[in-house]
Length: 166
Length: 391
Image (cartoon, rainbow over all chains, first blue to last red; front, side, top):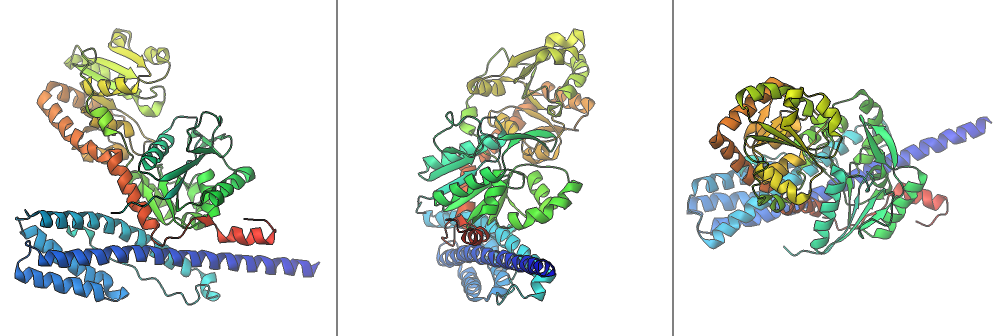
C-alpha cells in the first residue's frame, strides 16, 4: 500500500515537473517569436531612416545624425537595443517635426510608411513586453528555480520604448 | 505588401443562434477576412445546425448558465472538448483567434488544447471580483499561451490587467460606417426629438433615467418627443410614466437596418443613458457615424468612446437632472449640436471595418511571424501517445 502511495506521489511530481517545463518552454518560445517580429520591424524602420537621410527632407547635418543613429540601432546588442532605438526615434522625431516641406512624392511615401511602421512597432513592443514579463514571472517561481526547469534558455530582456515620438 | 492567403480559425464562445455583440463581431470579421481571400472557419455553439452560414461549424448545443449577472449561452464538457480538438487538428490553421478566452466556454477549451500562433480578444469589462483570485491560477497558464491579446476598449483592457495581470492592444469593435453615413432625414423623427435604441426593458439600458428627467425637460422644451426603438413590451414601461407625459413616447418596436440609419440621422439627440455593463458601446459608434448628436452617461466605456466628451455630450450616470440640463442646452443650440455631431461623424470613420479589420490583421501577422502552424498542444500529445490515441 505504502509503495502505491509513494509511486503515485512520484508520478504526480513527475507530471507537474514536466508540465512546468513545457509551460516555461512555451513561454520562451513566445518571447523568441515576439522578439523576431519586433526585431524585423525595427530593422525595417532603420532602413527607412537611412532612406530618409538620403532624401530631400533631410539637410546634411540631420542626414549625418540620422545615418549614425540608424547604424547604431542596427548594430546594438539585445541589451542595448532599446536605448539605441530610442536614439533613432529621437533623431527621426526632431527631423520630421522641423521639416515643413515634405512635398515630394517619394518623401511623402517614406513618411507615411514610417508612420504605419511606428504604429506596428508600438503593438509589437506591447506584445513582446507582455511575453517577457510573463516569462520572467514564471521563471521566478520556486519550483522552476529549484529544478532549473528553464534549462539553458537565456533570461529574456525587457524592451523599453518611447513610442510617442512620432 | 504581398498578401498571402492564410487559414484562420475563429472561436466564438456564445451560442450563434442568439444575437449578441460578440457573435456579430465574429461574423463581420469572418466575412471581411473571407472577402480578403483567406480561408476562415468559425467554431461556435449552435442549436440549429442547418441555419448556420457556410463558414460556421457547430461545436454542439449551448448550455444556458448564469454568469456575471446575465444568462450566458456557453458550451463545455468532454464532448465539446473533443470537438474542439478535432476542429483544431483538421483545420490545419495558420492562426486561431479566440474570443473571450477567459469565460468558461469553447474558446477557453481551444486555448487549452492548441499550441502555436493564437490571438485572443477580450470583450467584457467587469469590476474586480473576489472570485477572480480563486480562478486566476487555473486561467493564467492557459491565457499565457496566447501570442497576442486584443481588448475592444480601454475598459476591457483594464479589466484584463486587473484580473489576469497581462496587457493587451486596444483595437475597437468594428461598424459598417458607410451603411450609416447617408441616412435620410425623416421628418416624423426630426425636430425636438430624443431617440433611444435597445432592449429598453433591461434596467441597465437606463430608460428609467430618461423617464425621470422628462418632466424637467418638458418645462424648457414643451414640444419634446421621444422615440424608442427596440424589442420589448412597452406597456410595462408606460405604467412608470406620468399619464400626462405618456403621449410623448412612441415605441417603434424593432426597426430594420435601413430605418436605423434614417432614425439615427433624423433624431435631434440620440441618447444612451446606460447605467453600466457596457464594454464598448457599438450603437454609439453607429450613431456617431450616422451624424447623430449623442448624449450618453459617463460610464467608462462611453467616456472613452466619446473622447471624454469631444465627440458627444456626457452626463453624470444615473443623474436625471444632469441629463435634462445637457439635453436642453443642446436642443436650444443647433450650432453647438451640429458642431459636435460633425466632429463625431468623421471620428467614427475610424471604427469602420476596413480600418479595424486591418488592425486585427496586423496583430495576426505579428503572431504568425515564426511561420509555425497551429497544432494540438504538447501536453495533449503526450497524453494521446500514452493512451494510444491518434492525434
